[in-house]
Image 1 (cartoon, helix red, strand yellow):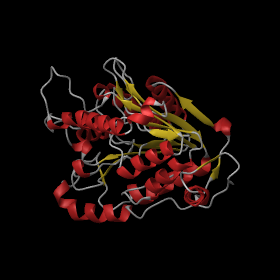
Image 2 (tube, helix red, strand yellow):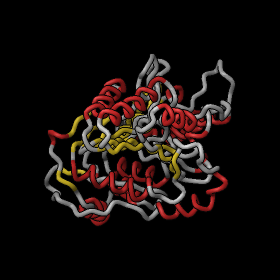
Image 3 (cartoon, rainbow, N blue to C red):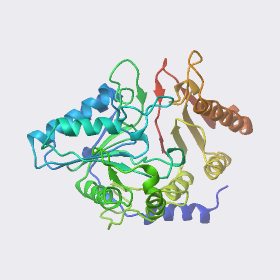
Image 4 (cartoon, rainbow, N blue to C red):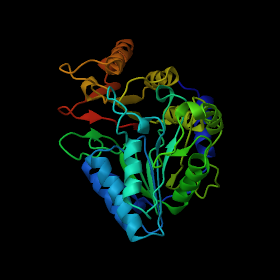
Length: 363
């Protein structure tokens, strides 16, 4: 059993986090990617102060074009709007996996800037590491006036369900002016003004090797950059705490670690990739030994965004879904006893040839 001392340690970590008061009426969930797309476009069209779009990528396809055109339309109608876009530096300057790096997203941003003279929408490329394979910008969320529209989705046809296929994610809209200000200021100070961050909508951007040293220093600086604010809520009221983190020792990772053992009856985890760190697997095992129930909803390997159908040429990246499946099989084999007693429930998400990208946990 988890000792009272250890449990209190986990609860103490959560209690010490600064919290912002949150009205339940100002929290909205969306349950489909197309619904999320419409909500995002509506909020862009009605924005009055600021729009800050942060995503891994804003793709040059119908879905992505719809978003960028909406941003230009909003800025043209209301020139006083503060509109900015932040995407991963490396991802924006390559083609899709296996495609040549011609007519990239960055090239498209430049064309859009040229086609809309006098309407300035900066697109910032944020380099998290010297190579894309070593780390990318995964701070995803959209700050529009006093709302934070939060999702793990990037912006393209599939994430936005622009056509037939979709990639399922989580979609939340939290109206909280204090939190929106905190997040906006952090993005401005640490991303927009960050060392090594450059405009992608300008053709004179530097080459990655030219800023390699800046990127290395920037990554080190980001490890220590967290939100700093004074909480306005107590432990007995509805509240929200924004978290950000880079590296395994970040406050975000520590909070996830401490949150899991605090589940009183059941913990539910959603993840598209079964590659849980060992420390979190140990948390799950301890919960099971304590008689708690754990449910994991994971994407089938064919619902993985790295999955390559058998009728298409194979690439190394396509091995990842199979590695995750091996991890899952080993995990279940190790904990078969708890599967047999229905203490451990694992569900595979699959819907035709659509994909699954939902991440989160609750208890």
